[in-house]
Length: 225
Image 1 (cartoon, rainbow, N blue to C red):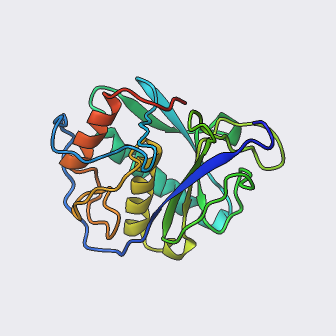
Image 2: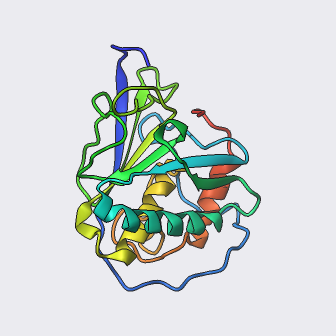
């Protein structure tokens, strides 16, 4: 990362309320139609990980008292998004270190395992997915490792500590935010979808969510990891 380079940042925030659990549906091959827009608002750029990519997520272990809750929510989110990749378009796996990660999942009150001085999370809500682009909108800015060192981390997902005891909401929120890190940069207009920008109802991606991510991962991309 070159110091002094102008940057454009975006945080995707979600303000949600807990609701009754939706019924779990079985993995199905998504349709190519019936989805919603997934491009980055403003420049209308499209991003997705490469074919068959393993998206590596480092789950913060700090503070220790909340580590298990965040790890359990991540495991649920990984299983949920597996239902949306019937042909192995992507897989999500847990990274063993920040240096080996593409995405960091952490509590919003920190401490963060990456430095955020040049790409600062901003916005309200219980969940936030933060990333920054270079001034020419052609590449992601990577988050340096806290304490020094480079990384391949493009996305910082932060979750409010206020929901640590609400396992249902925590699971849904982490799943939703990881959807943004997979390339779903917009919210669904349908309140019944996992990627809706308000109250979350389903535990798994809906038919529309699956159709959208299917279309995304079978579309040309402007941004590459």
